[in-house]
Image 1 (tube, rainbow, N blue to C red):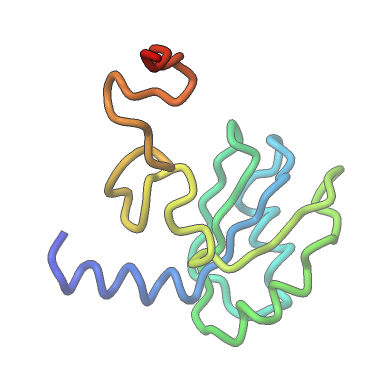
Image 2: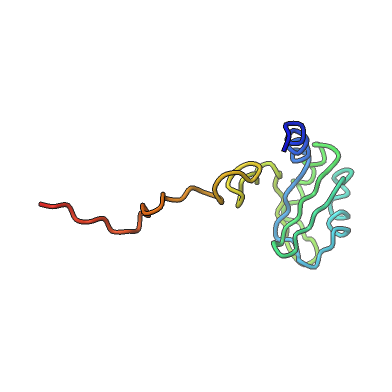
Length: 121
């Protein structure tokens, strides 16, 4: 990804929220309508299998208003709303999906659960 594309993505992420506990039956139109009172919605991406959605607004002011909808009902579920930027790296191993899968692992052959040989006395 070029520096310009990365900057544009970060800017869009700053105008976006992560919505969790989304009813898998909720189409993007329903999510859009739920957040329309916060400000103009630019794009909605629903991930039914993961029970989540991303809502991108045209302004950062709308993000602040959207955060107030955390705890509201969308269809039959109580949703949770957080800034998208706070989710960077969750399950991706770091910002922009680089690095290990969500955390560091012990080097090969160095797993902490393996017994170490007893020290010679």
